[in-house]
Image (cartoon, rainbow, N blue to C red):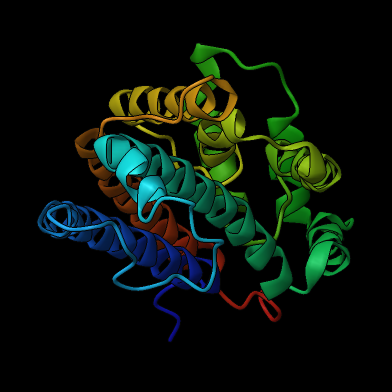
Length: 255
């Protein structure tokens, strides 16, 4: 039994690694500051070298320069990363649903099969003819009666006939989807509306991400970044549970 999408497993791993890294940096930085303070008593020398970077002319000059702002930089990095991971998760989960059902062509074939013309018996033909009238409240009971008669007979109702166009448009637009569309895609494609608070919080985090990515300063409050990470984690979990429950069902023999 599927409990999570593969996309969610990647999201969970990457976001946790990023959070672990933030903990590592913010734990190590004060200890480094203390060690450098103790080291100041004598002539500056390197206690250890970093083979990944060229050493500064004055030992630990780069580290000293970075220490005062390390939490703000880490907060900005955490927010940038976790939002990007969520964005990738959401779009990858939709790709996974399409692949699960055999891709666009297979889903289209299944939908066309459901929409194919049917041959109706006399009773069904009569019920359908009674439903081909403009709706009026005075005839509501009759419409309910004939609608009940058509249930379970494989009729593709008018609203279902719009779905094929929706599928083709969604797939055609995939490469142009952007992060700001995620709440609408969740509501209209996955049929999982965000609450008003979730939508507001999502867009606020997205705006903060944009300000960091396009701004002049790489800084963001670390505590707010951690809170944003937890919010996106909960939102990803909510989306994934919905996707697994409603979209990852074998439909091959249903029609």
